[in-house]
Length: 100
View 1 (tube, one colour):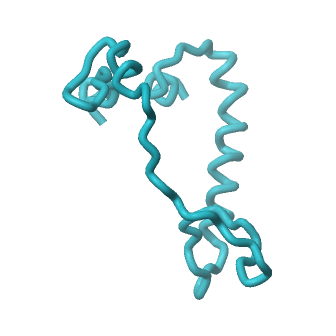
View 2 (cartoon, rainbow, N blue to C red; view 1 turned 180 degrees about the vertical axis):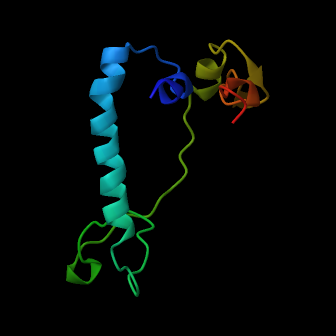
């Protein structure tokens, strides 16, 4: 449990680890139950279902709309690379604990 806490970058007490052990085991058991479900022939869900489109539910077309003050908004960000906003890298190999 302490290893899992390290990977999550949190500190827990021994009492919390003992309390959470059963709860996390239950989550793994639930995932095992999901793995056992026969999904043969079931198409993967690639987007949310908005009802039966054949029954008259029609989604609007997407249209690109220029934001008139876009450059003014981008001028306020701390770091840019052309039209892109630069953000700190948060997922690096250095983030892993124990080299796993």
